[in-house]
Image 1 (cartoon, rainbow, N blue to C red):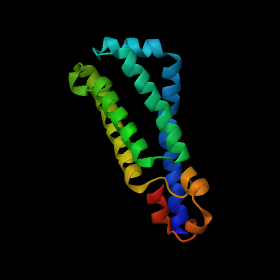
Image 2 (spheres, rainbow, N blue to C red):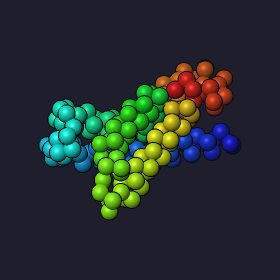
Image 3 (cartoon, one colour):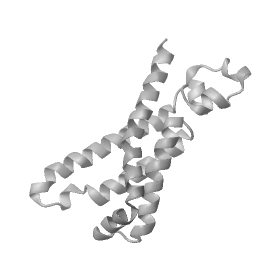
Length: 153
């Protein structure tokens, strides 16, 4: 019972985090030139390349989250994206005093997202994921406890 509850919580968490990244990535995909221009305006080198890489991370990462595939790699990809995005857009200490509070809130929101992704890095996707549900051989899945199933995914 507890394992099932934990697995449902992990699934809900994966979906919640994906819901943050995926719509933003799709929006940037359809406005890629504008996104690249905004990066250039912030002094980011190679803005077209970094815009494309950012969009890829914001689309591929959430899809991997929803499916529960490559959890450690997915967590690291989204952590790296979030760190870079935070330093580019929410370095609150560089903003005028009037904007610092709002940017500080966004900065620490992103720090919290990184914390959630670190939990995912450690815990894995849980039982409700493509690798555990569909790719495991039946004779091995019944012998695994839920923690072993998560760590192998």
